[in-house]
Length: 308
Image (cartoon, rainbow, N blue to C red; front, side):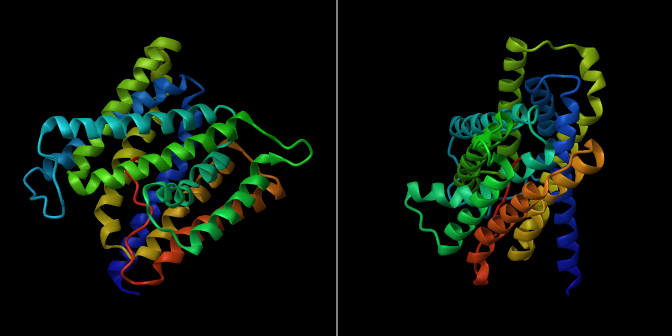
């Protein structure tokens, strides 16, 4: 295997591990502060952490941008839209983590890779058999993971994560439309700032916010803001465009596995045999959905993220 390929794969694996263990940090942080306070500070740090990257790229010509926004107002409207959708997805995920495990949240959130192409049908996009096959396998896995067979009941935490996965999918679609039209790093900073402001406003309205509690949650907040957003996002931007598409699809899907591993090692979370089988089926469905269309070498890189 080529040395550059190995390097790219290892860096993507590092990004997936950072994102997976972020679910653990998010759960630990809420031992001290509310979900909206956590997200508000986390995304503020994430925005600030990307400022050096934006300054580094400030003089780089936007050669890959097809139609750059012609006004600052248009750019801000785009950032406001992306940030609002991000706020919805991040809020549902964070609140859901109060009631479910980090491992479950990781696998359910990962369903966005299956939902995105299905939602794309509403915009006239075509999808392939792999998407539908992957969706069926993933839904079967979700049933085993989250639905109690004896009562056909789903926990509120899992339900919030499922709704959140739909918003993560909408966020991917919004970013997919905006990214070719503007600078992706500046767009990321803008949407993170919008998400932070919306989260902090909600926190001040419904949560008790204290500096002492924030200090106790400092390590998980720093992890979620600087590592999960700043470092992992920068790694993806730098690596994924030159990484092998199928490698990127497989490696980034391992985020869910790292979330389950982190929940087990750090939080002492365990999954039943039924739930473990569900996770395996969900991961299989995610990979089917992404890899089916990559049989052609010209296929675009899948699953590009803009957040965690």
